[in-house]
Image (cartoon, rainbow, N blue to C red; front, side, top):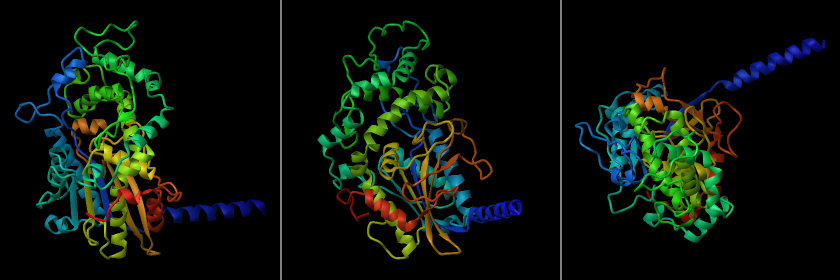
Length: 444
C-alpha cells in the first residue's frame, strides 16, 4: 500500500512540476539596456606607451587610417548589427516585431548617451534590428547631459563626495592600499604583460628605463579621494592600472592578430584574469550602494515606470516612449549597467566572463510578460552577451546559434522557476524601495 501511495505521489508531483514549467506568458514589452560596441582605447597610444616596454598596436578604420580615442571600430559596428539581427529574430518569434520594418519602427524607441561611440553603436544595432527602416536615435546634444545616463552632470542627482569616499573606503576596510596584496596575482600578470616577460620569471625584471610601472603603488598609492561626475571616487594608482589594461579586451574583440593581443602574451582567459582589476574598479565606483543610489535611481525609475505604463495602457509621467511602444533600446556604458545592477542587486554569470561583467555589446534585458491564464503581468530579466570568441570571429547569430544568456534573479521578487519570474507589482514595490526619489525626476 505504501509503495503505491509513494508511486501515486511521485506521478502527481511530476505532473505538477511539468505543468508549472509550461510558459503561458506573452511578451508585451522588452527593454534592452546595452553597452557600446568594440572601440579603440580610451587613452592615446603615446600615453599608453609610457607604461609598456613595447608599443601598443594602432586601431584603424576601414581604410587603414588611425582611429581617435574611444571610437567605435568597424568590427564593433558589425558586431552590433549582428546582435541587432539576433534580437530581430527573437522578437519576431515572440510576436513583438512582425518583420515589416517600416511598421515595426513605429513601436520601437531608441535612446543613446550622447557620444559618437554610443550613438554609432545604437545606429549599428538598429541596422540589424530594423534593416529596412529609418530609425531615429534620441540623444541629448552636447554640452547638455542626458539625465538618464548622467544624472549628476545633468543636475538631476546630487552626489555628496565625502559620503562617496567614505562609502568606498568602508568597503575597503579604510585601507585602499590593501588592494595591492589582495590582487597581487592579477597585478603580477599585468606587469609581466606590460613589460614583456614571463609572469613566472623570478625575480621580475626592473622597470625599463623611461617607463612607469603602474603596478608599483609606492609613489602613486591607491587612495580614495573625491572625484567628479564621471569617476566619482579617485582611486589613485589603481585607476592608472585600469587605463593601461583597457586596450587588451579591445584588441581581442577587434580581431587583432594574436601577436598584438598583449604582445602575444594574452589569451581570452588571461584577459579575463587581468580584467578582474578593471571589474573591481567599476564595482567600487558604481555598485557601491550609495553611489548606485545616486547615479542609477533616475534610470531605474524610468525603466520601472515604462513597464508599468504598458501594463496600465495609460501615459505615465517619467516613463519612456508611449504605452504602445513594444521595444525600448537604451545604449550607454558599462558604468551605467554596473550601477543599475548594483541598485537592483542583480547578478549574472556567463561562460568566458567573470561574474557580473558588463561585456562589450552585452545587455540587461527586461521583459514584461502577461500570463494568458491569469492576466497577471510579470517581469523577467536576462543578461545577454556574445562570447569573446563570437566577438572576435564576427560570428553570425541565429535562434539556433544565439549569444549566451543567463536568467537574472531579482532579490525579494523572483519566484523559484527556471526564469526567475517576478510579479510586476512586486517589482515596482521593491524597486521603489531602493530608488532614491531625490536622485530621480519624472521628466524624459
